[in-house]
Amino acid sequence: MRAFTTGQMAAEDFQQAFATSKVYCPRGDNPGFLALHNTQQPVIPMFSTLKELRRYAGKESKYFVITGSEVLDLLPTGYGFVLDMEGEHRMVFDAKAVEQMVEFAMRRMYG
Image (cartoon, rainbow, N blue to C red; front, side, top):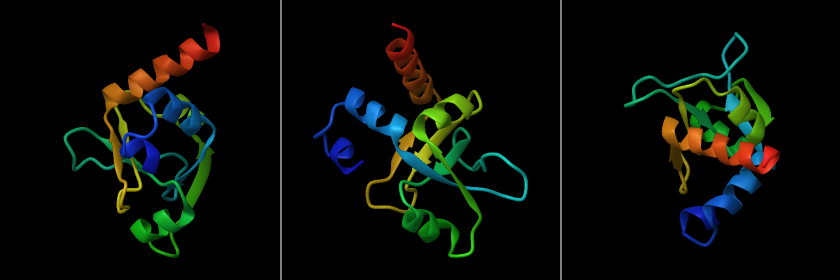
């Protein structure tokens, strides 16, 4: 993430790395993503490490782990996500950016 946010990594390279990376997602009592609705459009908080998740949600918080490609497959239409919300290199992807990531993944997979 640091390389991408500082311009040392191309968007395509980031998307390839994101697809295979583990992402830590806070969860409630029901299965699925927790969404933040106090933003311009709803976003899902996600974290690159358990330490980043704990910084945001607390030591006893519940969470699940999935890959970036699973995020793109499961994220509801119209939602964006934010990586490492409390971190130094926070990254926000709005719903349009998520759509572009999905399109990129589909082109890579199916040509």
